[in-house]
Amino acid sequence: MSQRQVLQVFEQYQKARTQFVQTVAGLATRPQNIETLQHAGIISLLRPLLLDVVPTIQQTAALALGRLANYNDDLAEAVVMGDILPQLVYSLAEQNRFYKKAAAFVLRAVGKHSPQLAQAIVDCGGLDALVICLEDFDPGVKEAAAWALGYIARHNAELSQAVVDAGAVPLLVLCIQEPEIALKRIAALVLSDISKHSPELAQTVVDAGAIAYLAQMILNPDAKLKRQVLSALSQIAKHSVDLAEMVVETEIFPVVLTCLKDKDEYVKKNTSTLIREIAKHTPELSQLIVNAGGVAAVIDCIGSCKGNIRLPGIMLLGYIAAHSENLAMAVIISKGVPQLSVCLSEEPEDHIKAAAAWALGQIGRHTPEHARAVAVTNSLPVLLSLYMSTESSEDLQVKSKKAMKNILQKCTYLPALEPFLYDAPPNILKHVVGQFSKVLPHDSKARKLFVTSGGLKKIQEIKAEPGSLLQEYINSINNCYPEEIVRYYSPGYSDILLQRVDSYQPLTN
Image (tube, rainbow, N blue to C red; front, side):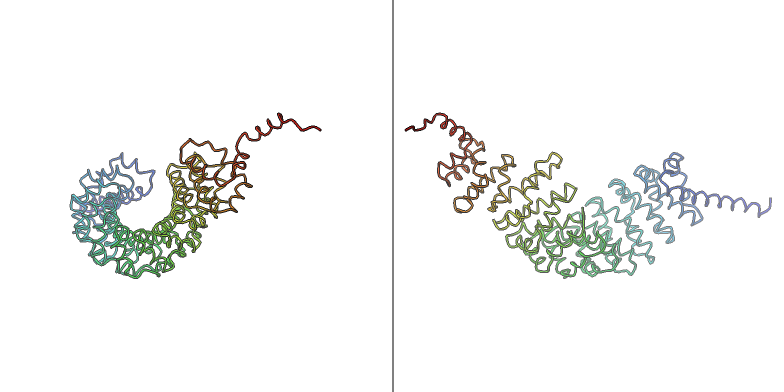
């Protein structure tokens, strides 16, 4: 056999291996093929090809493994059990940029499924190798490594801490300064995922100087980058007053408010979330947002979108209003109440209705003036129907009841209260009657209207326990009127009058 014939055998073998891994990598992109590949023992067949002498075969084998591991946690588990991770981690330091990207993709695909699988990557030294890749000259390698680190960090505080301890944060801060948009995006996302777990982890990101660079990118034209930047800033700000103040000190106001008008819905949502996370901490931070025009901008944003995009804005208005009478009045003046009322009535999702109910309760609970601003939007009957509806979630019922109670206990606007005399259950009725008992003694016009509208008659029909708070309220109302008027509107009084007619003997000449 000639030398050429011998070499031909090797060429055919190489061609066959190449064709095999390329075909498997292609098959692995389609979900309907995954189970068949799994049953055929594909993981154990690909493992030796990671050590192939031909670089393209190595890379394609890693790509195929990444696609398989990405599909479900069973296959990711099989990759771990097949002792493939140590080989990938070793190769991250030794191989070329194409292989590094493929190997990082496998680690990302394994690590995303569960904290246990992410921990397996940590245990085999994967973090150190990935962090070294963040210093690679090739932006694609940095990006692939950042993705893998992000999937590990997002699971819990312990894994995030491991990523921090491996030295990733300063390098991620350098990555957000790189010119490549894709690299900036993933670096910002990983900083967000690290920051979200605890104040300590957020502080680590702050100490690495991330806030200033993130704040500079708020107006970047790339929508996906803006989403990640705003998310990272909100994950830092949410933990404490100090961290929120550090974010504010980068002078994000009023610049960030322009993002509430962005074409991208998630930029709007993340902007509202960031402002909410700042506002919730103190009245002073909320006042700063009001002064920057933030409340009016958020109300416009709520009006321009639907569903979950509205949710952080709705909660923001509630947080601001909760701090003080003046801040709640700022929400009222900016026409926040009608917008929240629309959300309460229109939104199909119970959790969004519940947030709107809570926010309205925070606005209306301060003074009669605040309560009236809510009452005139006809929100109270909507809250009552949501509370009474068997189709409402438990959370929506609880929040509707609490909001109603908060508003009713301050409301002196009687036209809004009167329908409740007819429709409210006893536990709500008590608060309504209580408000009438406070207002009627001091308002003669209201007393007259209360009689002509049928309110006094309705009060006489309420069955209250003797000595109860409700009975006290009823007595206070009855004391506002002459005894014969009260008697006239009491149940059964017309029968007594008819009996007197029956027994009455007319005078005869």
